Amino acid sequence: MSRPMIDGILETSVYVDDMDAAHAFYSRVLGLKRMVSGDRLYAYDAGPAQALLIFHRGHTGEDVETEGGVVPGHDSTGPSHFAFRIAEDQLQPWRSYLKEQGVDIISEVTWPAGGTSLYFHDPDGNVLELAAAPLWPNFYPEF
Image 1 (tube, rainbow, N blue to C red):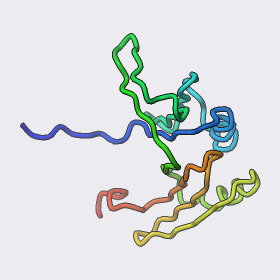
Image 2: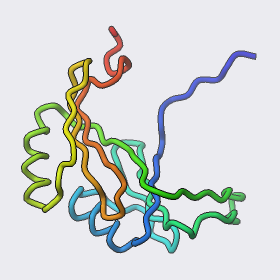
Image 3: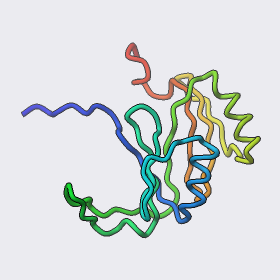
């Protein structure tokens, strides 16, 4: 049997200790719309057909029964990382906006392929990235 195709990443997640601080940051600072709110999970619209899941650290290790089936338990310790894709012409507006919001850019990287990344922390110390293409060979089909 040949391997079935993967269409992309549907969702990514981070684990936080303070759900209220996380919501204030992801909704107010980053402007993401919360789609789901619960005791152990917030889900945000991160772009067309993409979701960012914010899990309450220490509250997700057990399996959860739903009407549709069992969601296996999972958890994480320490900071994690994910990146949002942005257009190159949005790098300077993001630099200015983050500074205005009191969010320090902890690193800026120019990649060999030509793209640029801005790195900063959320309130729980997770490392977030705003990335302008190209970073990886698959950004452009001709690579």
